[in-house]
Image (cartoon, rainbow, N blue to C red; front, side, top):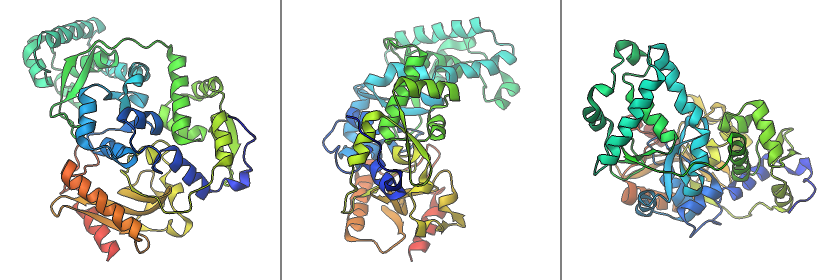
Length: 403
């Protein structure tokens, strides 16, 4: 499905926000879909030991934590290091080539070790010993258990290593094995919103595409997930060079589309026609998302999601629209940020600040997400080190702004 690009004057920030909202499946179009379907349609869910993967699935398809955890246990979805070496939750069809994209980031730590006199054959031998230990173990082994099992095969790198973030040789070996699909990390309690892992042996079939093919696959997925992005936005997500990006864009047949703001978006040809026919929904569509949700993070363009009259809004003297990353989680209506929220586990409630008086639809959705967090998650952490104490100032600031 292709057609002439829509008139640039019609591609206003408001229309493009609603278009991205639709492409992300936040309009109810993914209700009832599986975890794999959501991640294929909306994009990989960023995982940093926080609850974003759970809210990604809940907001789009109504999937609860227990179902998500069952899907993780069944390897239908899994957390893996991929683009930029960052960890995302992926669907199983993307495992092999997704890992391939993160391979360079897994190799990079060895360069640090090499400067401290560690030879490649030492790491290769350690990889084989790790793999043997995991194959022999009846249960997954955490890093401490592996160090105890492997003894002197794991070399301490002393104070110099600690300063460079490599206290022993084990993390590098684990990273290389994981990037090859020979081992995988298992969350110790089966949950995605923490960062305590053990490792188990794996035999993931290798990728069937070369590196150029993997980059083209990612660009195709990325443009489909976002509905269109600038070259700079795509490079932030992929970490591809300009030459790699341009080749991948050519491989997927991407085309340039001008917008009312003067930007040029790269889009898949079929999406150009879909955008030309797209009409923004007339009625409210309210969602509470994580600050690392795909809608926000894939293009890192939260500033564009504020309406003009809200661009000067501040929390704790921070102008929200000037931040590369949101300091709190967003409340949105059809792609427009209309407020912010944090979860207060001590009071089992959401602290929410909406820029205007909340409508019935806004209050209803806040109550729904609040109940889901309370009953399904217990807390909503942004990342592994997030805690009720660390976010109390932000909770207080949202309450004060809402007073």
